[in-house]
Amino acid sequence: MVAFIKMHGLGNDFVVLDARGRDLALTQAGVRALGDRRRGVGFDQLLVLEPAQDADADLFMRIYNPDGSESGACGNGTRCVAALAMDESGRDRVTIETRRGLLRAEAAADGRVTVDMGEALLDAADVPLAEAVDTLHLAGVAAGPLADPVAVGMGNPHCVFFVDDAEAIDLETHGPAVERHPLFPERTNVEVASQIGPNRLRLRVWERGVGITEACGSGACATGVAAARRGLTGRTVALELDGGRLDVVWRESDGHVLMTGPVATSFVGEAPL
Image (cartoon, rainbow, N blue to C red; front, side):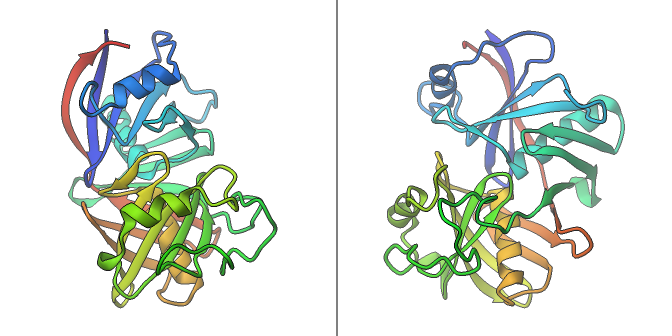
């Protein structure tokens, strides 16, 4: 049995395991079993805390999707783990190490947490894409009414479509088709966004290896960057997801993306691995 914490950011839910004092010997089958919402605990991502490898980090966070695959980034998950690390250390700033690098986080107003998700990746090879194409207009990537997307890498790949009405898109049908488009060798997260006001977007997300999620932090970051690149918004954007609001700033000075939102603990328990 292993102790876990169930957390969420705007309904984007996570199981957090602490492997800093023991080897959990996780397997893909074990991750899938824990992620089963009927027979396990259920999660959008599994977050495993490990000892930091970098001297400047407070801990290392490993990220798994429910299908057992590993991911390089998870914005809402980073905010949840940062909140745990701040509570543990008594500090209001922490550094989380991930496969993508060091992500710095700090406490914000009203119990929210801000995380610096690092630089947005705009070159095709960095997203990554299978071909050297224009990431601002991905010709040939389409599904039903979805066309002309923007590709953005946030440590994981994103394909962002701008539409008149995000609510009208059948994401359950079109999300899987785009996720597995051959242009994305590692598959992709899929975002559909519509403008609902100045610097304000309605966003829905099909998450790679997960499905439709109530919120996706890296997806919100990618969408904010894509909207600014298309000239639809400025570099500061409020995004309304199914689970609530995330605020994104694409910093001009260094290209880093800062994302702010709430975190919550749902419950704690023990589960077999």
